[in-house]
Length: 360
Ligand SMILES: *Cc1c(COP(=O)(O)O)cnc(C)c1O
Image (cartoon, rainbow, N blue to C red):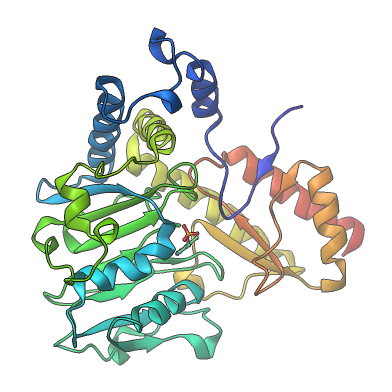
C-alpha cells in the first residue's frame, strides 16, 4: 500500500523520509542494540538526542540564549492553564485576544485563575477576520497578552505579530510554528502542541524568556511550573522520549530543506495555489478575509453541501484523506503543514476540478 495525502489537522502528516529513518533506527538505534523507546532518559545516548533536538530547534527559529526551550506534556490545552499559573499573579489580570475556538478555550481556562480582559473579538464575523488593531482595549496592568497566531479550525492567521508594548506576548503557535521564520524576541512565551507541525502527539514545546521563570503561584503543581522544567532540562520526570527524538528528526529534516525561509516560500506557494483555485472555482468557497487567511489550514465549503459526504468518499478513494472540517464548523478543511508536499496540493486541486466537472 502506498501512502495517501493526509490533510488532517492533527495529528497530521509527517515527512516520509523522517518516518523511513525512524523505521530504520527503530529496533537498533545507531548500533546500540535498542530502540530510543527503550533507553534511559538520563543515559548518554538519549541525552545526546535531546540536546541535538533542542540545538536544531534553536537554530531553526533563532532562539536567543536568554530563552529556555522546554519539552513538556499535556498538549497545548495544558498550556491554557500553565500560562496563567506561571504568569498571572493572584488577583491580577491578563489580556486575551479572541479570534476563534482555540483562543476561546484559552480564555475560558485562564478565567479559572484570574480576571481575563478580552482585548478584542472577531466572534461577530464568525471568526473570519482579525479584529482591527485600532479597536483593541489593552489593559496597561495586564500580566501578559495572549493570542493565537493561527486558528486551526476556521483557518484565520495573523499576518503580523501584534505590538503590545512591554507586556510579555504569549502565543499559542500550535498550528503555525515552524511554518515561517519568526522573531522570537517579540514574544515572552511561545507554546505549541507537537502534533501539527513538529512531530507526534504527546509532546509540547514551550519557548520562554528566562526572566519570566520563577513566578509561578505558590500552589502551582511542580509538574506545571516552567522553572522546574528549565532547571531540570525538561527531565524532572520522564519526558516523552520517543516524541522528543522524532521531533529532533523533523528539525534535522527542516534544516536540510533550507530551514524556515525555504519552508515559508513553499508554504506560501502551496496555500496560494489552493486559495486561488477555490476563489476562482465558482463552486467552492473560503469565507476568511483574504488578508488573514491561514497558510496551514484551509477550510472550504461546497456550493451544494448535500454533496459533502460523497465528496469525502470520492476524495478518500483518490488517496486524499482527512479533508472533513472540524466537527463544530462542518464543511471541508485541507491542512497544509510543512510535511504536505506540493504534489499533495496539486493532487487535491486536480480532484476538486474533477469533482466540480462531474457533480457541480
Ligand atoms: C490543536 C490545537 C490546540 C489543542 O492542542 P492539544 O495538544 O490537543 O491540547 C490548541 N491550540 C491550537 C491553536 C491548536 O491548533
